[in-house]
Amino acid sequence: MWIFLVENCFGKTSVCHCLSDGIYAFEDTLWLSMVYCFLLRRSISRIILCRDFAVLEDHTLAHSLQEQEIEHHLASNVQRNRLVQHDLQVAKQLQEEDLKAQAQLQKRYKDLEQQDCEIAQEIQEKLAIEAERRRIQEKKDEDIARLLQEKELQEEKKRKKHFPESSGANAYGDSYYYEDGGMKPRGMKEAVSTPSRVTHRNQEWYDAEIARKLQEEEILATQVDRRAAQVAQDEEIARLLMAEEKKAYKKAKEREKSSLDKRKHDPDWKTKPAKSAHSKSKESDEPHRSKNDRPARPPPPTMTDPEDLGCSHFTNQHNSTRHFSKSECSHKGFHYKQ
Image 1: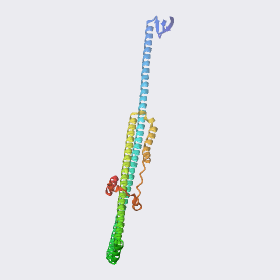
Image 2: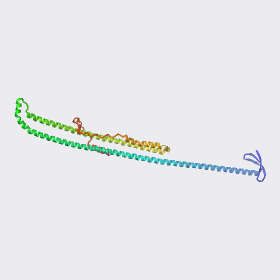
Image 3: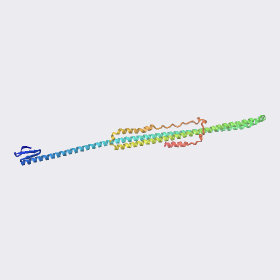
Image 4: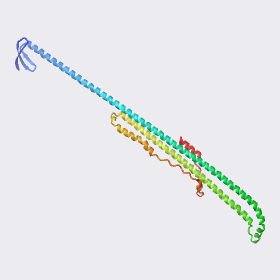
């Protein structure tokens, strides 16, 4: 405890006892009241100051929190705008690639259709040429048969004219031959041998003509069957190619749809644009690879000349029925064109 003297405002000295920090004991009551008021005022000002400081601190904290919220909102808006712009660019790029793929597919279909039309037209032209050639050959055969028939009739007329004279002139010789050794008459022998030779030659020629015609029909039927088989094979190849292209197109659509869904649900997708672009380039290269790897079209059948084939190759296959005719082949070509 300390004891010290304090002079008040009236010039009076009072004894003040300092018991502890903030606790004072005065001998004078007036002075005690004044000190108490001073200390009370000081504590009140301190409380007000603390309150003002707390209010200022709260205001500063609120201001900083508001600024952080505003900055976060602005940053999220900027990020969202960038993501939307990037998504729009990607969607536009995907749409352009889709349009390009559709254009290429339509062009490919048009090329295949044009190629099939050319093949069908070529087959029809070959069939028309073959029919014209067969008609000309039949006409030639008819002319040859008519000439041979006329020649045979002329020979028969000549033979009928000369046969009675030879028989009358050789009557004595014939009886002489009969009396000597019972041999056959010479005129009768010549008359019998000449028609037999002519008939045998005509029969051989007729058989050869029939064999040649049957062989031509068989060759024509084989060529028609081969063309029909080739047209069917082309149809099957085209159908398989169309099915493969549809499957690839559907897979690409599904992948694009799944990637778009992932982009919508994944906020960190902005770190993966390079990978998606690379995968898209690979998918866009698949139709080109499938186009380059498609099976080659078989060459058209070669036309064989029926005159070059001998009659020795003729077999009994002419009895088999023809499965495809000229009208059926042209109808198949028209159907494949559609």
